[in-house]
Length: 336
Image (tube, rainbow, N blue to C red; front, side, top):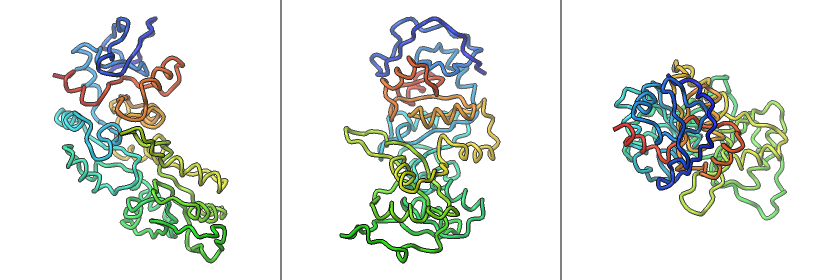
């Protein structure tokens, strides 16, 4: 197993494109008995023995999905082959996503269609976590859901009623809502990604949350989705912060990098030191891995940009990944 990387006085610069990914100065010589702990080490600079030891240093692979394995409905080149390669090596695989728009079986089908070997029980989505959490605390009331059918169907599967999915018509006098528009059976507000977000939904959420006994749960606080073009798609964090602002309440967040995911994964008996977390953003995936004591691999195919990474390295601002690759599929050529 790798242990802490010894300090070295080298200003190691990592440019992420394949063309410029090599360091501008000679990479430090690493003792293969040490771990690349928070060193932001370019795995492409490792020797064959170091790559082999890296691959032997973990038994379980946790991977984010959007921005690591695929973007929208297209697999990132080499990602399916890399995940299937890990499985062939005998690694235990979990797909850990903050995406709440699908149920686990739908995620598994999507993964399979894109070339990944995946089963529903290997999918850990925030929609499933919401249902698992509420069932676990014995919740019996109704959920007001700012979200999609992904969460709604997972709630239904565990016998929890919900309202709120779909458009909520904005009236001409949008401030005319009164108490009769609220369901007295609601005992929790859940916020996930909702493409039909509207002012009436914020009003209802804040009104339910005015009751201190009403639970406030959020799937995640991701600021945006991985970019597939120049168009920015705001993430669930945008909606969560809006509801927190108008309700003057703080949500219990279940997705990465928060503790509930770690507690859930503990039930599988993972050894943190022999678990690898792969992600595309430092403030969720890598922070989650660091908090849990996992090894971490950052790929540059999603949210965190090369400029972001260089800024964090130069500021020495945690969380920093152990190793970095331009894309997950690059592990295949290194291992061959």
